[in-house]
Every structure is written in structure tokens, then in C-alpha cells.
Image 1 (spheres, one colour):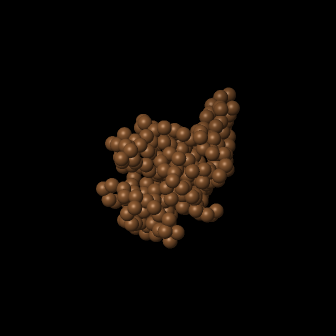
Image 2 (image 1 turned 90 degrees about the horizontal axis):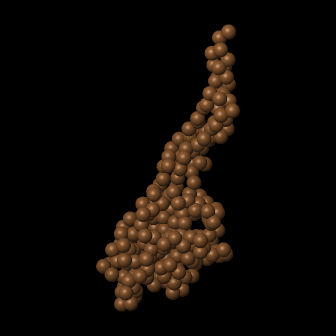
Length: 248
């Protein structure tokens, strides 16, 4: 009796089952967007001297999409398994909101001026150059709608539709100018604009994290593997994610 025939038949059965399983487990063409996931990291730096204090808030928003979904087939029926792409095989898109003045130094009482949205790398290098403490909230997984709002705000800043202003009460109410804190806070104005008072740096970033908390899917869970994509895994950043407020 040819023992190869039953083995071939078993392999055909296993292979067929794996294809059927993958059909239900993975999205069809045109459904890739459903597999995308979204994340947010809020940062702040502060420090400097009494005569020249420095403080800034900034945030990065990420979209991850699997590059492929691989099916692993075993010759043993008991060892049949279907797995998706690991985190390292993700396409990661990143947008950062880091709203800066364009003058050489920040002038508290200057009129609104042209602003510039800096990259995450530039902002962190600036903090390192001036030996400032950097704080981090996240990465947190967020709802898709917040990511869309963040991208819209990012594009507004990049396209010159907003001016920079340290004291932005008037400009913010008109939608024409804002500071670094409100550039992030105004991503969500569903319940009114966030009032930060005199908070800057770390304390302001905590208010931002609390303000945007309803968009966070699971605040207690972090996604540290994204730090490599942001290039921050080896930087001296203080993680304060566990201090996020439980309520708005």
C-alpha cells in the first residue's frame, strides 16, 4: 500500500482548511482600512533658567497598517495555525504637531506671528541641546476619528492657516492664532475649548492627556513597540503615562 497517498490527502485537507480560515480571518481587498489602528503620544519639555525658562507641548499621531497577512500551514492537522503579521511588519505613518514661533526667541507679549510646525526629531534635539526635561504620555491606542481630527489640524498648521501666539485668547477665539498647547487641545472642541490657565510644560501636557482621554481606547495599556518607529526608545524621556487622570 502506498503510504504517501494518505499523507498527500491529509495535506490537501489541511491546506484547504487554512485557506477557508484565512478567508474569514482576514479582510478582502478594499477592507485594508479596517485593519488600520491609530495611536497617540503626548510630549512636553520644560526647564531652562529663571531668566530664560523654556516649556513646550507637542504630540505625535500614528497610523499602523499590516503590510500583509501571512498564513502558516503545517502538515500536521493538530498543528494547523493561522497567524497575522507581527508588529514589526507594519506600515507606520506619523504626523507630529509641534507648533513653534519663528522668531529667534519666544516673546510672550508679541503680536501673532507666522508659526512653524516642527518635526518630532527637531523638537527633541532642541530639548537635548538646552538640557530640558522631556515627558511622555503614551503611546495610547486611539479612536480613528481623533486621528482624522489630528491630521486636519496638522495640515492647517502646515498650510499657514494659523498664526503662533503665546497669549492667544483673541486669536484662538477667532480661529486665527494659537500657542503650542492649544494647537493640540483644539483637535477636540466638542465640549468647548480646553482652558489651561497658566499651565505650561508637564502640567499642561497632563491637561491635554486628560482632555483627550475619551478618545483613548484603553488608557492602562501602552504600545512601547511604537517607540522605535518614533526614534525615541533610547532618548532620555520621562514616562508619566501612569499618572493620567481617571476623569476629564
